[in-house]
Image (cartoon, rainbow, N blue to C red; front, side, top):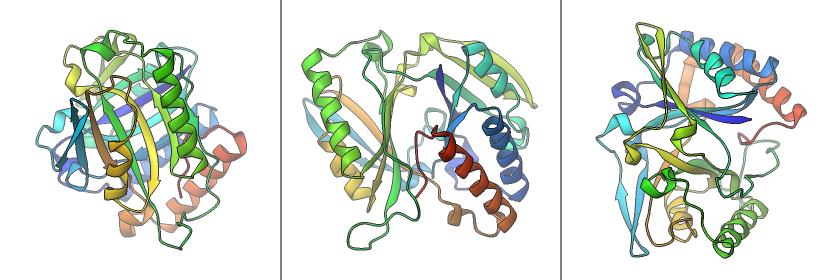
Length: 287
């Protein structure tokens, strides 16, 4: 079984406060343990919502809202994807989340990967080096988050023809090198949350009532700019047709952390990424 661990945003992550060398090292060690156990599939941090946008569809017409967004508790600051035998095993991994993160005050949501309609996830081959467009322009990575609602939480199933449209669009994105990954999430009734207070974990079983705070699926895009990501989002055939809300967030790159991302940490991450690629497991590829 595959799970997505969503690290909820807080005041510090939304303020753009970057993790220091100690926290980066602790997260690197945690990720390395996941990799060595054959459990880790992917993991990334997301930049503050001030550098993102939302596209809200009503009657099929898109309305773009620039970040930042004030409701930090509804936002995501990062994610980890892992493979585990069960939800219980995934929760056990989350219990050992580095205590340095958020000074021991962190909330993590655990969701099972896999579209309720049975549509397969899509991913491109890992990039061999820094990604560039055909004309040499650097590309940026963006996480596209489809917001849940009462219908997706109830296990809504699009009709087969609409699923075909979504699959075709995903395959076109992968073939063009724009889409790095995409996956649906099972309803929160099949998920859980782990809330840390003073570094101690408390497990809360789903479902969760506040549907507007939840995620129903995601895509990872590799494009030139936020504007290009917005253009892609505007034309996607979403499962609910004319009604959808999508959040667009830029992914952190190693260079964003400055001196805190030491040569030793960089070398350790490259070893971990090479191991993931060799195993054939990564769902997303870092340019």
